[in-house]
Amino acid sequence: MNVGDDDAVTATAASAPTTATPPDIGPLPAVSAGVVAALVGFTSSFAVVLAGLTAVGATPAQAASGLLAVCVTQAVGILLLSRRYRMPITLAWSTPGAALLASTGAVAGGWPAAVGAFVVTGALVVLTGWWDRLGRLIAAIPVEIAQAMLAGVLVPLCLAPVDALRTSPAVVVAVLVVWLALQRFAARWAVPAAFATAAIGAGVDIAVTHRRIDIGAMVPHVEFTVPQWSWQAVIGVAVPLYIVTMAGQNIPGTALMSSFGYRVPWRAAMGTTGLGTVVGAFAGGHAINLAAISAALAAAPAAHPDPRRRWIAAFSVGCCYLVLAPASAALVALVAAAPPGVLETVAGLALIATLAAALHAALGATEHRTSAAITFLISASGVALLGIGAAFWALAAGLLVRWVLRRRSAE
Image (spheres, rainbow, N blue to C red):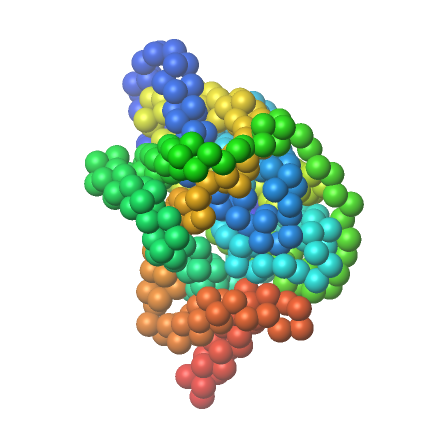
């Protein structure tokens, strides 16, 4: 993938051109695929977003506002890009980025400094679309190092189901059983079904213990935050968030679209997601980007036999996210009233596949295994030095070790 490509783009069929014309079966299959993609994407990872925003200092109201912001900004971006380029271009919030925030914890300067870091991240994404050298620099980061950093970030979150077994065993066991059963028979719906089970279990627990839910807090609203700037937040949050968003979402998302025959308009996509991130940051949103894995639900032939009609699936995703966005406050209220660890369990289950893929990519190449292992260990340690989180130090250490070992082997 050439990150400096211009926006003269056309959609083509993923397979070789044929003389047969795809049957005109109407837009319904594409609309259905878009609805499924939105529901799966939202329910499978919103808990990760809430966990990440809360970890860096957001109050429940600010976390709800952040979830609302990323839903709206990515929805608007999808509607604009898919309609303009007639491609199934779907966007998503940065799930790896949210996991990074959850592992980073509180930053110097608190929540306003975290918001400032989100603004910087968005500005860097916009710059990447227009400055070819920066895009190539990010693409040059060794896959093993970037994926090892991500894997280390994910480990504490993926351990949440184990920890939750001690605090809320009844509900968590039910969630795990449902998740495992769906992994066997319908893996796409495993995490949404686990969330539904967690919600039912939380509802039963709330009723049995006679706890009250703040109905007023369930009304969607936006909490604006004036960003502040601290060098610790920029280095410890903005830079790692930018790297995992680019290396873990934007670049793979572009490659996935290419596998289905679509050439993503790089500058337009980076400009839209970067500006969306900047705008959403003031309401607490952390980052939006090109969808990677979930993009296949709208871009694959299953969405529509005619590649020229699949943009309707992406457009439907955007419409669905606008409908789902107002549910953010209600979800935060549910999380606050749920038994301890239940929603964290859903977040951990949602990230297991990502963790497995990251570990495989990080440790697959024998010659880079040592540098990747060191990156993974430092990232998983959660250690913070000089007010800067572990992800940055893990990346720096991994690159240093890789450089030293490559020089030694060259001598």
